[in-house]
Image (tube, rainbow, N blue to C red; front, side, top):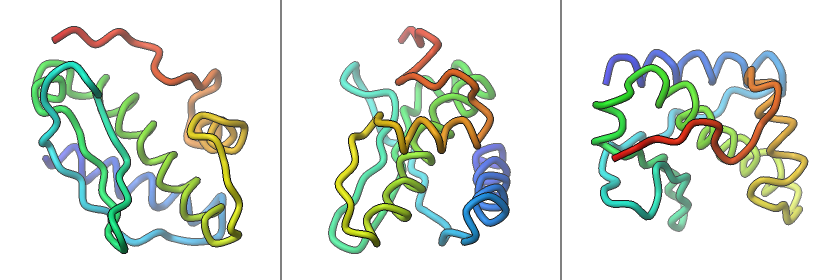
Length: 117
């Protein structure tokens, strides 16, 4: 969990430098299981969270965090920027891709690694 918090802190710093705001800390929960999703940004009412796959995190550690946590955090930033403007954006649209590039992924896609359960 220490690696998760460290990366989240780094992402918050990048957000402040690049977008001019420092987002609130977001709950990051290791509770996804099964084959349906390897990560998820979730909005429930006023609550926002990122859910990660516990088994994949244990198996792949840094690679999983670098790709999946950053991917989900980009959804969070996209939501924070565009939801305030009332703008509807596609989950992996141009706004999300630009955010991913700023976060260090030169060729952003849904995922670049095939994580095997």
